Image (tube, rainbow, N blue to C red; front, top):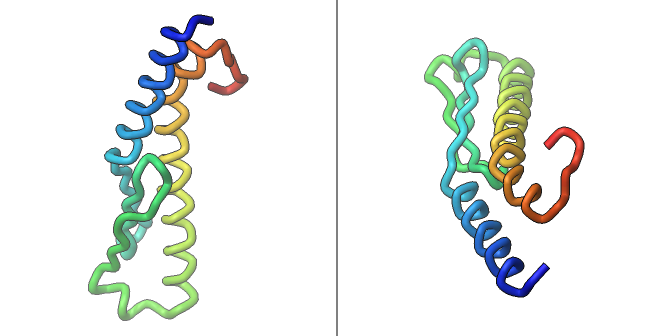
Length: 98
């Protein structure tokens, strides 16, 4: 692989990284009490609780938060895998599941 090809792949990888940083993925709990927004780098950007969340007992709210965060991160992981698939293929890295 030539130096020019390596430079192109590095540029593509950086572009994907920028896209992931700016991509927002939202997940909401089934009951609508919790909303979580993460970016494609799997960083939590926003946590919102509905007004009704104040009337829910602590244990149920904690469970809703945990499930919703897990869902948001899972979706972000899927988005990241999809966006990086092309770069990985260009590098000759055909990984199962990608």
